[in-house]
Amino acid sequence: MNYLSKPLHGVRLTPWSSELSCTRSKYRVGLSHSTFSVPNNKPIWRLLDEGKRYKTEVNLHASGDDLILHIDCEGQGQFKLNEDNIEINWTEQGTSYEHYLQTMGMALWLDTFKQVPCIHGNAISYGELSFGLVAPSRTGKTTLTAALCQQGAELMSDDMMALHPCRNAAGEPYYDVYSSWPIARMWPDAINAALNTDETQFSKVHDKFSKRLLNAEQDLQYNADKREVNAIYILNRIEVPEKSTLAHPTCWIETVNPSKALIILIQNSMLADAYSALGIEQARLARLIDVVQTIPIKQVNYYSGIKQLPNVCQTILQDIQTHKQINIIS
Image 1 (cartoon, rainbow, N blue to C red):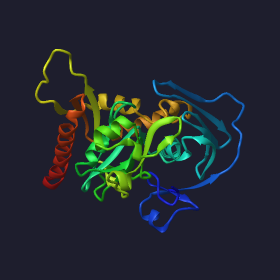
Image 2 (spheres, helix red, strand yellow):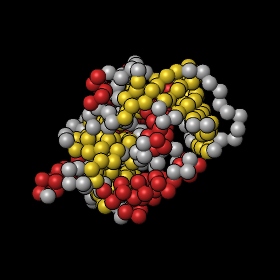
Image 3 (cartoon, rainbow, N blue to C red):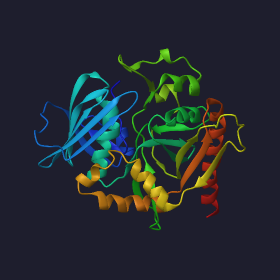
Image 4 (cartoon, rainbow, N blue to C red):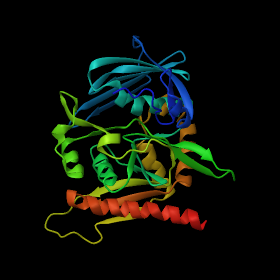
């Protein structure tokens, strides 16, 4: 499915943008497919993550005014970026470019050229409210997101959220999050657990990868608009000790102090520590300090286990509604 006419994290892609995308976006960038070579010079930054299920290698090169992001994972290819354009050179086999464009590629463009902090996490709306879920990969973030969508929440973005700084009429800061494309990738066990559905009805990301592709508009609940970010929840899944009964409550939320919250957001930044190589580390740090001073950062502590999902969802949704009540009172 071609999503190019849809805005991506508040960015409309030309020349494919539809008129609707102009009302759901803040920036514009040219997007094209072309063939180009990766520079022979040493990359200015490199990421190597040898996970249990797949290996990820990412190299970042600088060439004049261009940045070239070379990705070798379940999909292989390059993005060439500057302030005005993004070019794509992608291998047909494996994971398609869309997943990496709406995560690493767009995060690099927004953070570098538009000073918009991008965090590895899911953005979710609930009525007129929205919140982020942040946790390391393979720790149940998408499973919980799918379960939340079964209880009235709506997915806005999967795997990356861009925090757009704004100010209201009184000059007070706040942050907006815009939707990504309605694509979600889930492991088969997560589909079975959160959706109580046979995963075989969903297509694989590709033949050699067991993750499945979900169309969030059809298979979950999806919100294509922007929302102010009312809270960011850090997921802390706790293993139940052997030979013990579950303590009560089995899920509780606590506010994270700003210094700890800052460290967590740095650790969960898209592209990790590439910003030092780009020379924007200090400016980005200042932006993240503003984030933790503006958005409530909370930690959701909960015991692992599929049976805990409904309680975790209810606890988060009840907590996010307190932000609406606070806004009404103030």
